[in-house]
Length: 436
Image 1 (cartoon, rainbow, N blue to C red):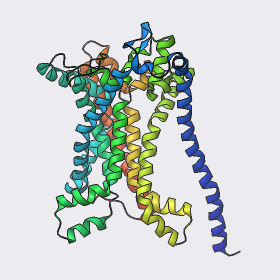
Image 2 (image 1 turned 90 degrees about the horizontal axis):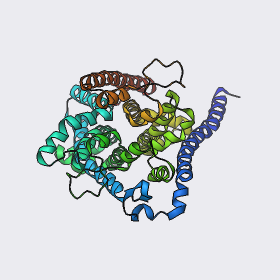
Image 3 (image 1 turned 60 degrees about the vertical axis):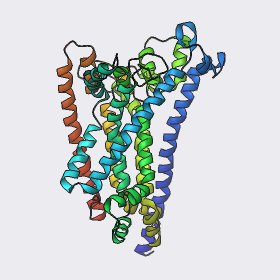
Image 4 (image 1 turned 30 degrees about the horizontal axis):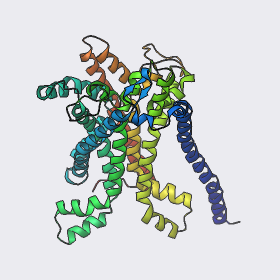
């Protein structure tokens, strides 16, 4: 056998092992979703069997002690909050992404991107603390009590702007340079090029950014607990206090029993229901870590999938034309091209995990001693901030100090991920991807 034949045989053998391994990982991710659905059905089915699905929309109101479980007001509040936050955040997020990708000088653009990534990791409890001390008093001057649907929309919109911005930046960087050069050659102004060429070409990625932003908004717990007023009612104006499904589960799950508890499972909030699925682990770092892993999996998978899909069409055909195997095309062509988008997904996942509060409240516990193993209870910085801001009189200054320490940690992580990404691109291709 010639060396070339041996190389081809080795490549085929590696490919035979590689693709089944990827398929197994994909099946494991699907299994997580299946287990979530199965768990929800198991816990909620007894109550559903008693009165059917319709009762959750036709009962007289939300009075669990009187066996009345109408979730319509909370469903509408969640929907209004999500739509309102998207309405505010999407234009701002897309505008920031356009400026940092096409308009700002390179150093300023990099600084802005780093700031956006760090702001994506600000704990939600910090957003809530800021909303309680700043937004709610301002709105109270217009209409009492201030804690309202509008307060939730404004604070949640600010919270999801970084998510939309980061994913939109990744989408904009996949627009072929030839499109922009061709538009310039036709004498089209830069603003018209952005509106009529760049945005339509990246519309799929922008839509994905909106979907992930909406997912984070509708699943938000701490912010709405702190700024929305927590009254179960159908809002008739933006200044009405409301309670969302997520806030309702967080408020009532600790003491709910029987049908009341089953009704909370029927509400379907994955974040808090996964906590109960892992209850056998007790309060531990391992329980919190596993729950966070399940929570950030969709964000990580969707952002990476979009980056690979965007790079696939032309580059895959070129790699195949050169006689490369599918494995070689993936590792040596698609991954280097999609690496900035993959990096964005990793940064979002890291920041989401580090900033999470509600999940860790129910899984990792409050203990502030040094953990000796993964099965020990522990307190994250975000939980510590929540405790200082809600349970400790005069604890707000210390809460802000803890938030600053967390932001510095996140900034270091963000810079490290970008440095590793540039190094990997240089090793793989000899060049690094830059914004247009």
